[in-house]
Image (tube, rainbow, N blue to C red; front, side, top):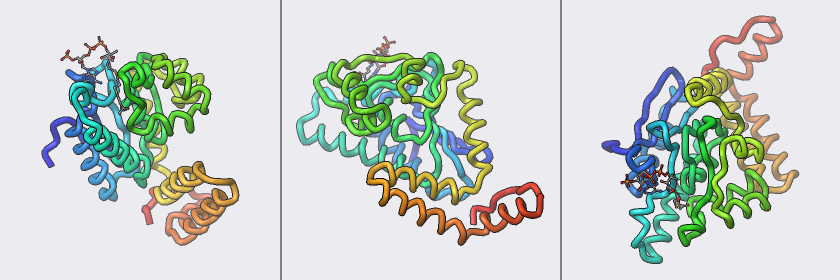
Length: 261
Ligand code: CAA
């Protein structure tokens, strides 16, 4: 697929995905969502990628939301179809078997806040701003905001943010637990890359299974959730990486290079 609105770059074991419509503050139109879906598939199938960073082009916006110009004249059926497309792509990102870090470099509004919440970890520049402004546009959040925001920050805070359409600064996003860390804008990509590298240096299968167990366990009761953990834990003992890492520990050697096997 020819990519016009999304850039995919690879450095060592890390894929950097940049949403690239800076003139529209990286707003997500259907074409951009379709390209993102394709890029997620490429990363899924790339055995050399162990961690992913998602960011926005330019210094102003991460993603300023779904594309309002495209949505303006949609019918009920078209609106629903657009919502389903966004939800499908973001869910695929959330379920990607590799950790995804959102490097939030500016406005993360509506669909932008929503895509960041489908990532595993959010690091924000101190210039970033978050919010779900949809009710001010006559719509509900449509790419997962009504569901993921409450799961991230709690029901009361999610309802306040969505009902008021209020936009919050990075330090407030940190305070309510929406982001993991806030850094200076010029440090954002290096902080995201350093984190991605640290993760990529651990056993990829163990990271993947941890992600699955956390994601699945967050949606159910503790007993079912712990059974997912036991499954994941057991599966690790079928890997060469577990044998190598534990042998290295016992033999007082430094573990060098996981094989992803
Ligand atoms: N859709 C389409 N175009 C957008 C956009 C969006 N979400 N956000 C910004 N743009 C465009 C603007 O129309 C403008 O284009 P032109 O230069 O052609 O006029 C360009 O990006 C720059 O934007 P501004 O001139 O508005 O920049 P600003 O600095 O004055 O304001 C802003 C920045 C506060 C982010 C403002 O652009 C804004 O409020 N954007 C909309 C944010 C929003 O409401 N997002 C939610 C969308 S709905 C949604 O996401 C639904 C869902 O859940 C799926």
